[in-house]
Amino acid sequence: MLRLTKLFIATLIFSCGVCVSVYAAKREFYQIKVYHLKGEAQEKKVDDFLKQAYLPALHKAGISKVGVFKPIVSQAANAVNEKLIYVFIPFRSYDQFSKLEEKLIKDQQYQGNGKEYLDALFSEPPYDRIESILLNAFEKSPMFSLPQLTSPMKDRVYELRSYEGHTEKISKNKIEMFNKGDEVGLFKRLGFNAVFYAEVVSGSRMPNLMYMTTFENKAARDAHWDAFGKDAYWKQLSAMPIYQKNVSRNDMKFLYPTDYSDI
Picture 1 (cartoon, rainbow, N blue to C red):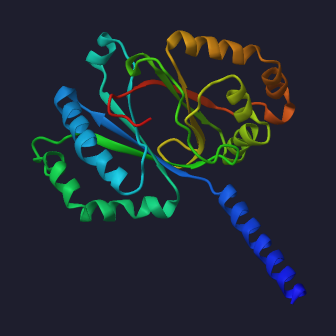
Picture 2: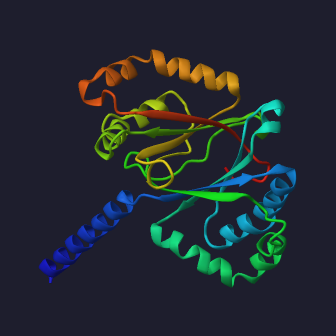
């Protein structure tokens, strides 16, 4: 009887250990939707849809935090460029992502709240186009984080970076630099308040990785990057022969969160 009890306890411990290990290894799946807009009328229509229909529906579907961001641009630049709205959606898995549209179709409250957008006339489209980017979270940062900021949302700077590689293999090398090389840990130590780090699995620019860091304001952003460039560990890591020439294009977007963003 004692042997059976010990065997049962050992089995239970092993099973729990496996469960914890599997859970700990689980990584999130992200979608970034980029709305390309022409003019203030389309911007207002999409803002209203996101605020009144889309985000509440995602919350109901089990996605408690959704980020909505707009570019930080001068009024002069904004007058000649298209308007953009970025929506960051964290999913627990690809399965949750793939079933979302089916849930939205069945959500009558969503259909009602979003009617003006969903049933827009052919002659009055709510946007020019939607760009969709799908991403897998990094091993070193398996889940997104809410930034710990205290400044007014309008003053905050969210920096979205995309690092492209000239081949799939070299792009994996840059991702390894974040994981095994612990570039993620360096950002954390220096207080970059990162929201996510992830590999793009489907998008218009590949192969690449993307990540988002956040700051109280532009001055704080510049100070953090100055410290990063001077950091001894970064100098050591970036000088390693294995990590040379692993980024062919570095694209930076400076964003601010909308007043209805969860992140």
